[in-house]
Figure 1 (cartoon, rainbow, N blue to C red):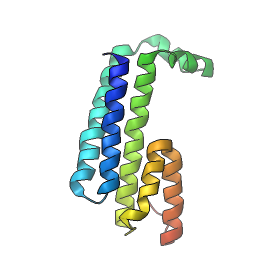
Figure 2 (cartoon, rainbow, N blue to C red; figure 1 turned 120 degrees about the vertical axis):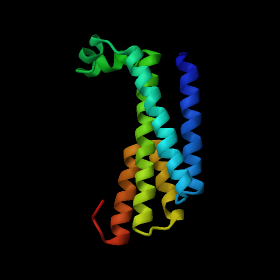
Figure 3 (cartoon, helix red, strand yellow; figure 1 turned 90 degrees about the vertical axis):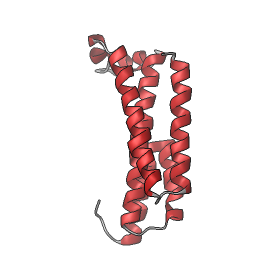
Length: 141
């Protein structure tokens, strides 16, 4: 697979999922489509890319920062890593939606956290958790 094409496709698919989550976060079909559709598709693509590019030398390269930098100078490895980020950031976004719904947080209130999670994964999730704990006075997941 051409890494440039794969990169463009996964970005577009992830963006569509994030837009749908932002427009209708509490819609069960949107949640299922994002998790059961997009995340699964990204996971399958990740598995195909991983299997197609994995070799024993990669494990050695992952042991050092210089090795990791070397791996990510390869477009295929970079797309593999990017697909990983997109999938897990979307899982974090779905967690935010479902957690907010459980704790009766307004769907409008979570939109900034969803976009921050889309752009900066763990930072968006963390700020949502802090917000939710302060709002509900409950530290539970």
